[in-house]
Image (cartoon, rainbow, N blue to C red; front, side, top):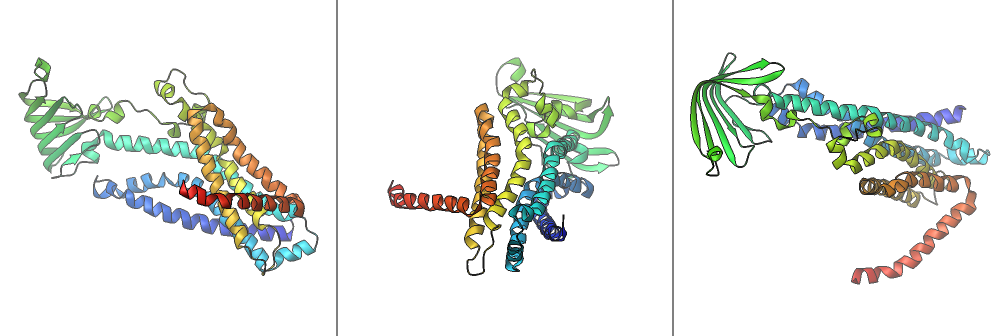
Length: 389
């Protein structure tokens, strides 16, 4: 790159980093505030809090990077045009391809970053987050329950103990409502958590088990059993850890490319596996497409009297429309394999149209502008009819 292209590259990269850090920081703070119950309600350490919230950063960066890139390209083009630098480059005979080269180079770097994040880092972070949450819930007595409080898990288990005396828990009450047809309540004077063969157990002493059934069959009648010692398998109480099944977004790209055909979950959710795979493979295309959209709308030299408001609005509408269309195509792909054409065709066709506008010259831009005006002229008279309908 020559001196001018290096200057443009620095402007774009500086604006991109500023937008990326600012937007990621704001959204990460909002996400972190939602996870504050890990510390306040579930008794977790600050390290676990930052681990859980930090694992969401790769996803935030991958989502925000194309937006930050679009803002950076628009900012750089407006700055070059406002300082009359685009006018000087055009008057000196610099073709659009040379002006676009630093934008395209930086867009390629961001596209590679997004591809690495979506193909490798984000699935690993989702899987690590799922394992961490499952590990916290597995031994909920040590990690979640607090002294003197009633703690209810998502699967219907409620646990309470009066106080802690060393390693022992005093005044234990545990209610198991996982089965709607029966309820089981454990009462004990004291208890202690133990580890055996990689599983967590709660050893209860001097208590009783109250079973309340909803039917008249022998197995569904109410009963009370007293005991001197009784062990409860805490891992069995956590339904999530008994059979941990990773969702499509939590699986590696290799697992999506070559899934286990005998997997029951894959058989039920084959469409979601397909949609997740191709969404990862096309994520980098959107980052590259926003560069072409911004340059096609704002790369042309304009004087201060001509203004750039309409061109900026057109660029924003095009980017938002492309993002919505890609989301819709990905959702359709989960239901029908035929939507695969739209998943890849939308970003590629957008890039193709932008290339035609950038390098096609004034005639091509006038043709697209005339097509837009013709469409608006035909559609505007139909608006009153649509409103009445």
